[in-house]
Image (cartoon, rainbow, N blue to C red; front, side, top):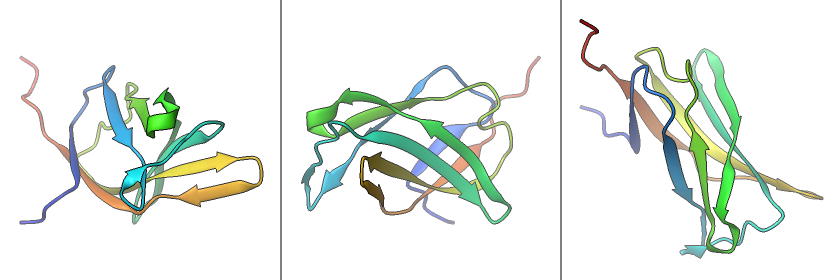
Length: 105
């Protein structure tokens, strides 16, 4: 059985996935950064969505899951891309699985 860094439920949306970006074990100051969630698998890029900074100085941000983001039962890789003027850096890569939910009645 594979261990995943995160799980989401198939077809659910309207909720936030919260992140804290760290640099060498301490929160990274995200002031003036744009943060983008990138999600992909062997078929290519699945999602590239903008994150909202929660407390930039504490390295916290969130992505609000949209309708259609995770409709398929799949395994994905994901990372956060941090950009600002003259700077672009990706976080390390994490794994994610989309899990089945109860069928509609």
